[in-house]
Length: 281
Image 1 (cartoon, one colour):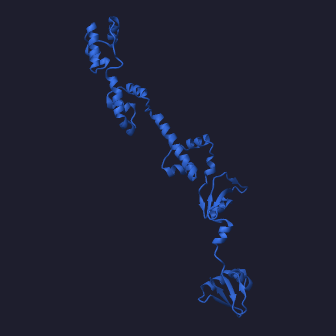
Image 2 (cartoon, rainbow, N blue to C red):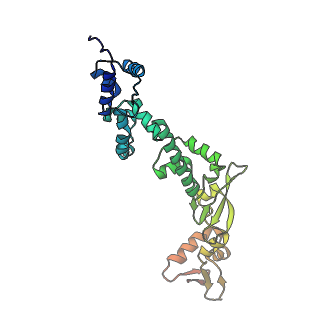
Image 3 (cartoon, helix red, strand yellow):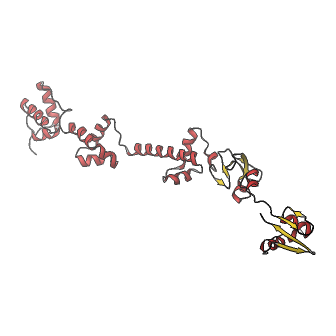
């Protein structure tokens, strides 16, 4: 190992010249076969002011990072990859980025991205209803559902009120809760009739089974008018096939009578010497 150079004022000035030309302080010291501490001590001893912080390779980091910033943002690369591509040390890259007010910490960026996704999921849930997983599926994203629940809680939103919101059964559209649980473990949900706009509470099980499809007024309006039956001999008119079957036969014969009247070519039926005709609309 060669002996270190005795540091004279000329050596200190030469080191400064090399740094001004783009070399780092350590590179300048190595070229002069001296140590950086030795050059500092000699500069103080001879009263020579060294400009180290503002020259050398470190001064090249910021311009290069600013030039690379679009690529850094697009690819989402971290300080390790930046250091590898530029040839600078990772601490140097991190320090300059910090001075520029830029954070490329993966955990921090991931946390911020997760928060943005949670906001989107909650907004979708409030708009379209369902469970948290339903909202994530609609958006094509995946995060911990608990994050969305905690966000909703912090905003005073009870997401259980949106569990069935927006679901449509016939002409009923389920509105935002709360929902009432009955003694039979069923749920009473607030519904809006899309036909007339009336708001009523309906059993969720009845909605799902199809036992209720609209409010009474809309259901009555949609129900087809009953077909009447007329006796040709005495002119008696029955308001429905069911009424005719009950009065002239029995309730058990209703379907038989109904099918006979509907399928016969002339819509007639003879019973006990009297002819009955179906009055079609």
